[in-house]
Length: 364
Image (spheres, rainbow, N blue to C red):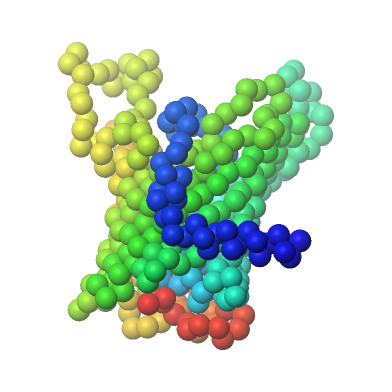
């Protein structure tokens, strides 16, 4: 078995001279993967797993910080300095829903590879299980989870590339499903000019076992591009993330519903070019207060548009914010994101460094 793994990584080392193969993998998707939200299975894969990601708007693949939790969604963000770093997150939603996240990193110097293992688990509490006539059959505890393994290597001085393999499981009483997927990411870092860019293809895979009585569904594939720039003479970092690039028009318009609530469309259909474009955009900013404190804010245009309530105040819907306190061996983070007027949820996370490998604080 040991010989197999060393042979495998010798092959990987040979392939790093053929970086264009990874670029091909990033754009290799099935045509039927281009589906609107709600038409895919395992949509919990799109939810933010860490406070910093939540504060950054829910999606960010380039932020320059030593938070291993961000590498859960972009394996190319793994770094040797994340050796033994462990991220633990707890989220409490409405109606007894709980979310638990755990991720840990390990750097293997002889292989020049950084590994990470993680799990993201959603528990929806207990509820009665009934038949089609309403007879109670017992109690069920629905849940979703994903377990994943990541590996990342460096190419040259500025490139990092990584792959994540996922096993996905969903259980709602007698309705159960399993799936497998890959994430592939490439990151370019220019430390001299303080910017970083990434390209990521997420959730390339399929159902291994479909839900009872249903047909196979598509996974929530997402092609993402992002860039982050830290200012040289100010304690600020700005991020721009573009997501769902595999399909330009992600607007969902139910004509019958719109007519029922008095939102009938004009006889001349509008193109909504501006709206269609910004539904792919997430903006974020991070303020550094000394070396130990980060304050973050993000804006998700798609979330605001999809959750707006007609003829009602929508407050800070679509906005998110958070803060982090960073020490050498421990990082404590908190985030709050807003969903409709006066509706929000809080997220807490703790990141530990189990030895003194590398430097604490932000990854330069």
